[in-house]
Amino acid sequence: MKILTGIGMTFLFVLFCKPSLYAQSKPLKFGTELKFEQTTSGGKAKGEAINWINVNTDPDTWRVEKDLLICKGKPIGVMRSEKLYENFILQVEWKHMEAGGNSGVFVWSDAKPGAENRLPGGVEVQMLELDWVNQNISNGVKPPIAYVHGELFGVGGVQTVPDNPRGERSKSVENRCKGKGEWNSYTVVCVDGTIKLSVNGKFVNGISKSTVRKGYLCMESEGAEIHFRNLKITEL
Image (cartoon, rainbow, N blue to C red):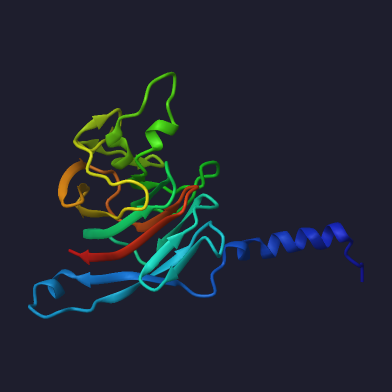
């Protein structure tokens, strides 16, 4: 029997063990899922816990502490919902812990990260901290402040029609976002290829005619610590 060399053993380790770098011992539980009829039955529905699967981040990128989901922001990547969603209302609160922090939520996602950007296809609901525009001035031009809170756009070949065009993206019509360390509230209504976004109690953005209309939800890790709470999905 031929004994494997050190190089051969290393190759086998990488080949068979690499997927475990992203493994979770069990799904992370965060947020609540409800059926629409549960919200209209007159009772106080408890709903079911939502399971999340690590796609391409480290095992310690995401953690739950009491009612908070904490993302350390590194490495860049996502975790996805265990199940697919089509027509639904997503409610979530979030706050950045660093000036200029970057994150977001993908809806109708394929949960398949790109080779270079490590992010999946779908429609992204942007979550940028207000100072991002000051930290990313290009050729003397500052991005619009509405860019930072709830710009909507297709990723990975997904096409949409923007309500408030900024190129192929749709930006919010007014700034309702709060800065570092303050909670923001998003309500994201996703129905038959149309998305409407409410920021802190007012609808300010939307897209329509998305070329994808069903998929996973993905929570995004993109370089900065961000906290989430009170996530609820109501299936329609």
